[in-house]
Image 1 (spheres, rainbow, N blue to C red):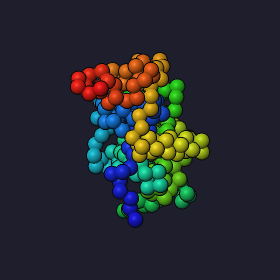
Image 2: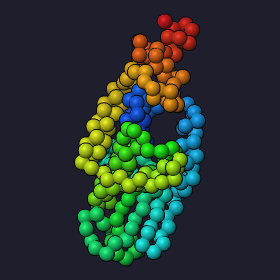
Image 3: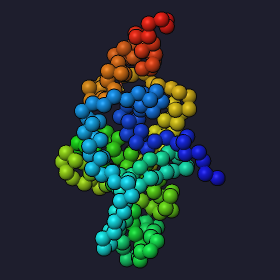
Image 4: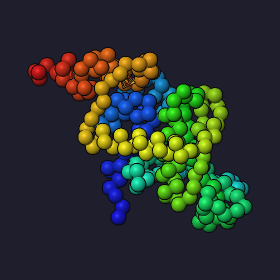
Length: 227
Ligand code: SF4
C-alpha cells in the first residue's frame, strides 16, 4: 500500500542537514526561512532549470526536467532538476525500457548548483538521494550522477558509492528522528555560520549558550508577556 507522501521528508533538506543539522531543523521543523544573497542566487539557477513537463528526446538522449521523485523505503520525496536518459546498445541492470522508444536507456540525475564544488559532501548526498529514488521508482541501477556548478560552468560526474548511500540513509534516519520528535539541535557557532541564510534567526552564539530553538529565542527575547 502506498504510504502517505505528506509525511515524507523533502530531499532538498538533505543538503541543509549535511551543512548544519540546526539549519535543516529551523527550515523543516520550525518552518523558519530567510532569503539572503546565496539562497536568492541559488533560486535563480534553479529557475533556469525548472520547466515542469519539459520532456525532449533528441537522437539517443532524452531529457526530463523537474521530475517528481520518491523513495517509499526512505520516506523521502522531491523534484530532480533534470534526469537524462541515454540510449545504449545492451540491456544491463543499469538500463530501462522507455514507452514508445526503442532500445535500452541509462538513467542519470543532474543537480544544478550555484557556486562551485564544496569541501563537504552536502551536494553529493542530495544527488545520491535522487539516485536512490530513481533506482527504486524505475527498478534500475544508477551508479553515477552529475552536478552542474553555475559559477565554474562545469559538470562534475559523481560516482555514487556504497559509502555515499550509507551516508544518505544515516542522514535521513537522523532527520526522521528530529522531525518526528520536533527537535531543533542547538547551534555550534562555526565559520560556516557567516554563509548561513538563517544567521539572524538562528542566533548561534546565543543558542549555543542556552536557547534551544528560534521559537524559544523569540519567546525569551521578544515575546513581551511570556516568561
Ligand atoms: S547560523 Fe550556524 S548554527 Fe545557525 S543554522 Fe546557520 S550554520 Fe547552523
